[in-house]
Length: 465
Image (cartoon, rainbow, N blue to C red; front, side, top):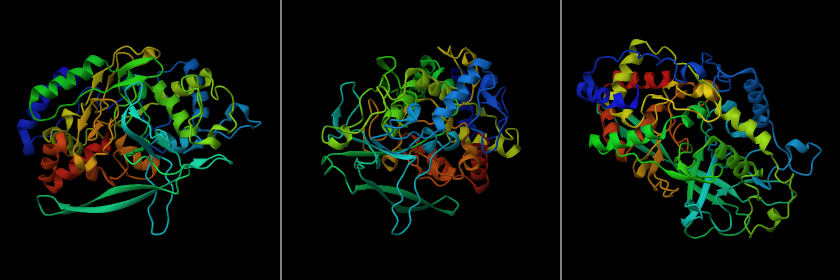
């Protein structure tokens, strides 16, 4: 369903309301990554396979990139010179430690008397103001990200504590539900107190399938979705984020990150090497240490830079070309019923089902593909319940990007958990829906009024994606 045809279909579904007939499978819908990037594997490795349309040379690059994505880095100096330079501060030793099997991370288990430290859940830090590129101003002592691990001889920045508050509610038919709201605190600080106006934002590692396809969505189609939402007049008003891209050296449309705060897979990859593992590159050449962290500044480096452009490029290509799993039983009656509920609730206004990709600058096979990611790549105000209180370029404290939904139903299979949203607070897909507020308040209320059967159908549809 191309965005220009979406408004009429969505309006029809809304008019039909709670008694809508099942929506049948559309052409190409079972292949969410298009013909070039959809695979039929639905097992533990469903997020880790290359797009089937790659050439032999591209597959070789994919394999090498996979190696550098998943193998652990070590501190310098080391005999393993191709993989040394970890730290000085870090939260993980490899990309794959957070994106396990290229999938979604989960918050640490919370048990009485135990403070298990997060790995796949990172903590962004900032203070009021903007940096030189218009992004968040880093906390003066701890920088833009809180790292709870360090190489020998360097102090970790501290530890993270998570406490959960239970919030109860009920559907219109009386069935109760319970949500859990996380509260974060930072303690055992290695370099003194945080700035008194420090803003804290947790971000879980998402699955990384289909990223190159998302890069190929035309900017004009993203902006058209925003215009359509405004024209509909239902209070849904997505807006693009304009962010600094270190690769292009200019501001571009944000497509990645929980607040659409990253424009390209290249910037995302190099930034993660730098922030999460302390690995420098040509785009992020300096060690991620503040002037107050003398031991960090004095630590050994693993080269200048610690990952060269060739190796980094292979990791970027790997991240761009991970295939999207095909749909599971998309023509099942309950799935088609759930699809109708999804549209009737207005969910598809932001979770735009499909696009035809434009030209991809480096992967020609990804051009002209009909894809089904269920996102508009736009920022939305989703209310106080999910607010982190922290701006990020043009994103406000209550704004989050509409995340793609493809692969959603395979997270339990691949990663062994069912934790969703930007910080993993939702323990089920229905809990994720119920956290929506703000621009999505009408959709949430619609779901609260559904029958038990329709709620089950909605979840079944989401699981099929």
